[in-house]
Image (cartoon, rainbow, N blue to C red):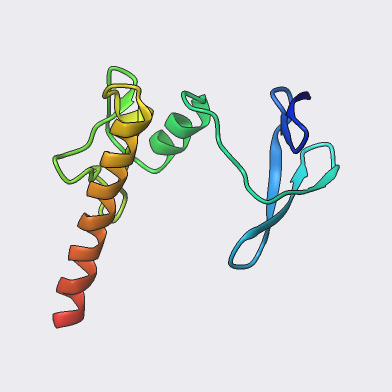
Length: 116
């Protein structure tokens, strides 16, 4: 653990086993069983877990990145991806934009299904 500020700790060698909470994150349980009360969880970029999960559910990758269309949709219906894992520019602004595109795509799908 590395202390970044008085109230922010960075855990680089521990893995999260469980996230606890209702509408918001309240705590996490690490793989060693240690429970930490937290207000938020931030996942590191470029972690291999994202691509491992993608492969397990059949998402197509290209050059190590998740392949998406112009709506940030993957080849698996209902699954969208954005940010570093898609291989685009690794900047927060780009990831936020891609997240907005994905969210709007999901809203459009919901609206279409609601019409039926």
